[in-house]
Length: 453
Image (cartoon, rainbow, N blue to C red; front, side):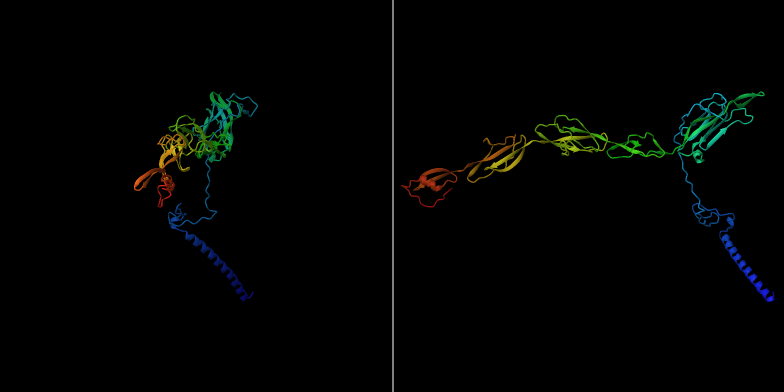
């Protein structure tokens, strides 16, 4: 290779090296910039950010936003209330792990009890002679047993917080777990002059009951329904099977039961006489009011009012419902009375000119006196001819106007002297009267005369 070729080759190598150095510088600069951006001598070992302001409490730097992957997850904690424990004994005969005879024991040598609030469960050895014993349910297990050189029985009881069984994952709410006890009895034996606690039988397995933690919900406040009384919660839509618990444990559908309210109608004679039975009514059910049997002399029953002096609101025998929504209420109805009255008709010349109603035993108010030309009004008369003079009205009555014709006196003068006098009715023809009363042979009648008065 000549010198020129060598120089060109070196230039190519240096160019590559130069590019690499520049790239490395850019990378280092970026990293240093990022590092110095958050660098603070007060926070050499890291920032301490306030939970509310998200600002460093030492240097005031803002907390960088976390990516989705860096965001802290919030665990949902389900808290179960200890609701019920079923401690039924499943059998008195233990299941023995060997065929060898065992020392006679109680049906359940270990008991399971709970405190008043059912927040703590305690397991205790009943016979106080356990050499080895173990309690298991769900994922929980705890045992006590012989240790070398023991001169006293092993621990005879232990307690567990119920909520911790859920929190620590030993049991699941709403699941029933059989509680199993493995038990080996023990006794003192003299070994080389020393009482030593030793096994006195074989392993026996018992089921002392079931352990159950269930979620609890308080029953809601009783619902209301106008005109009805809440009777409780039921497990069926027809409301035949009542839910008798005071809490709800687990998933369940409950139906509100209602009973239609009943009330009583009391009938009041309200100055009348007689008796009527009360009437029972049911809300939302229509019924006819009991027909009135009260009476009142000279009065007619008009209907029922809700106050003693009120107007008619319900007629006799009317269909009614929902007079009140209150259970056991009393509704008072008062008879409304109207004084009896009669019709009085007034007749003039064969025509009825007016009609009035008159309360029984009251007098009729007479209309204005009628007039008739040539006649004088005499008065009002019953059909039997008796004149009405403010007598009490006791029946429907017709009163007829009676008139008397006006009488006229005619005086005849002849030659200045009274010839004769004649009385006649209003409207008599004068010409006829003259012809009948003047002697035409002796006198002649001259002049013009009105034919009638």
